[in-house]
Length: 184
Length: 235
Length: 198
Image: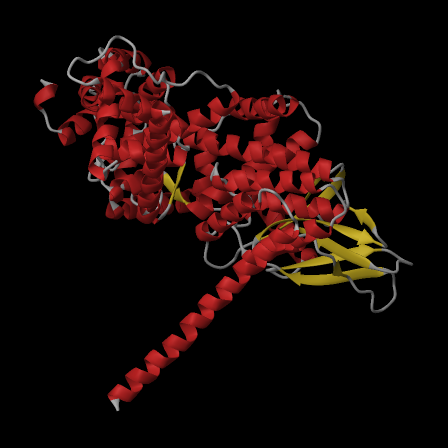
């Protein structure tokens, strides 16, 4: 029943205590939230934890959400801030980041060169400062506008653009360096 | 006649605006000069953080000039001075924390003529406390915002948020420095309650901010923060 | 690398990372629902009230109406209680007098009076968080050994100490509280706000 309802109806139903309606919201947003967390935190365990926490906390505080405002921005903001909290914790309790090489075999549709490039990007993303990595994830995974990213991260739009520009410049450098090493 | 008035207005604008910009640049240059006079290796990193602080409204040029000139004049190892400034810079730029309390403590330590080691230790502990308190507020969905976040009902404007973080962190620091056990969560909570109540009673902080904190933060949260910071300092 | 290529590469990489880990997301909604259902208390009067209050916060008119009605109720309640319970009435009047006495002793609003008895001292200064701990000299014009100064200060919480002939004194009897700092003491006083609230 819930999978055909629009978002506003689902949120109203959730507010009325229909937890299953919230389940449908989770279903619609789980990939976006998980992708955001993975991009920010660069490890599966934390991305899983924070995704889970985001949905629980969002539900518990749903009565504070203004239905006329954009829900995606609200829930992405919660996820983003929980990620920052976790990152702070990780500085003192580090764990292994995402492996550069993806396990489980290659996608036959991609060439070896493309796979190398993706490995380089993964390494580069893990090495990027957090302040560059977060807007890049929101832009290129979550496909958000600069304005939306600015609201989620509580930054001026100009700063968002600068951080994305600098992050990409660093990634380009990463690829460039790897190219030099490969050809050495 | 109208054209003359308009031209006069434009002329005034062109005179006043560059003067203001020049004055602002001069102040930032003063800070840069004071920093360079310390002869530190991390001058660029520290200056970058200071400029971030100016942009965010979290630092004032005259307070930085005062801090840097007092540090420069103080008898002590250059490395210790650098560590103190780096701690503040990283708290400001990397962790996006309000650092007025840290600057105040450095100035107090210099005025009291305590060792730079003691000041270093104090600044490091308080920076950790600021970060832990900020993260605790985030975990309890008390956020901050720039003008873009005003519509989000979970946020406080940055100055109010910074003030809350600073006051709570300062309370925890005072508790720790008094030598009492960090495990007495209820006592720590009482201290925080008293501080926020005094600020509210004097209308320095809005009642709704106090209610927000007391509603969401529990004694065990504060015990955890103090234990975390203690174990970080022991590492 | 061309900008478009890099952006495509970023998108593909991030997508692929999530696709590889997608299996975790299977059943997440059921897990969340189960957890929330287990946690959910029965919908009692308190939860209903909380929800009503949150809804009211979104309607300015309703908010004002509720505030107005509540104020009238408490006004009548207050009059009723104070007239019938003499102890309550007495307590409040004593509290008011104490408040006024404290304010009269301390200082004018927006100002802090610093007083330090130090007969025979050569210099007495106050240092504090109001000016980055730079010394501000007190004066003893009538030479009675009582040094003082009046500082206009914006609303806030201030830590300070006295420095008498180079020696720090951190425990001012007029202080609201004391805190430990660098192995010594600081005094603390508050300057209240009577203008627009922050």
